[in-house]
Length: 278
Ligand code: AMP
Image 1 (cartoon, rainbow, N blue to C red):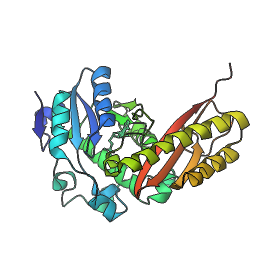
Image 2: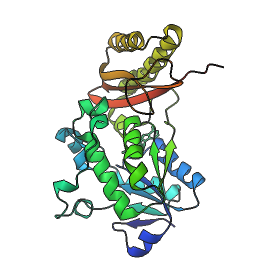
Image 3: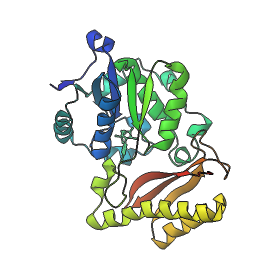
């Protein structure tokens, strides 16, 4: 039976739990995290739904973020999660939670996505840290869709909580490659068709890189594709997924990351590039 809770009591605090933090407006991507958590652990599953103001650098983005609590609860009940944690704002950030408690994501949090959303990753780390303190999970699941977020979370908590297992979930896409996102529900049918090109652009950029072995040229190629499709973008970069910095082209694993706008909606996506030398 699924229980909806607003607070974590002592009994629950001590229970072995696999934690899946979300901001709600759930879709198949979120549900895949729940399923992976269940498959990978024997722990109870706890999914939080909390729209974290601190990670929105743009107030209008926060104000317009989709909310569908009833729909979310129905989906999570079907997945038979044990707990749906829906905290109030003042439980997460009580009055005595001063700015001093805010976590800084540092240099790696100010690059790429962070360069376009100043303070965003500080807000992400702050809320995840706070949620971890309250929930006290033994494992937590995060999606690879938010690649830089996942990197920063792994880095930050590796030392701080070394008995916490971070489970990484693959990106869930629709049949034409569009990465599932809560924001997709704002797109018109035409917008969905346009947004599907982002996947194609990533794929073509990857193929171009395989043929030319030149990161700068591949980035320029990908950006040119965005221009051809008349899609505005914030960035398209190859990164080293291990350190989230500019990679060497000979690395076995690279990641192409991007953020683009369709019908004014900001969408992020990424694609792994695995070079096999054997
Ligand atoms: P959000 O509600 O957007 O904060 O996302 C909550 C979690 O779901 C994060 O760990 C995301 O990376 C993950 N997530 C969101 N969309 C997808 C997707 N399409 N595939 C896999 N994971 C996702």
